Image (cartoon, rainbow, N blue to C red; front, side, top):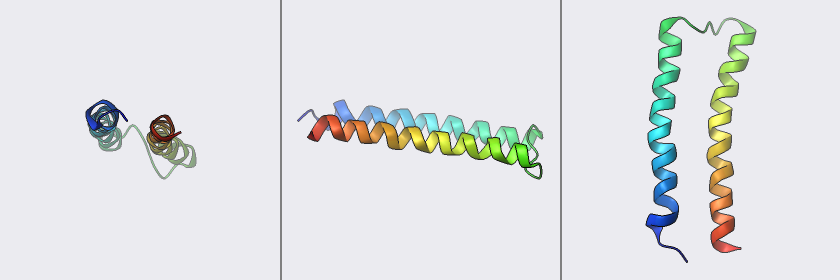
Length: 70
């Protein structure tokens, strides 16, 4: 089995550091008034962005696990 530093460390870095930038971007979007969560369409796209990030984290983790154990 490959070492932790070759499998999970890049994953943690990618979604940890990337998640921080994503979170900062989402905060900037809300504070700048670029999104109005009272509007149905804006709320939809805000949820799509959050779900998309979570989806890719889970998708990537699943395939790392699949590559390591199957």
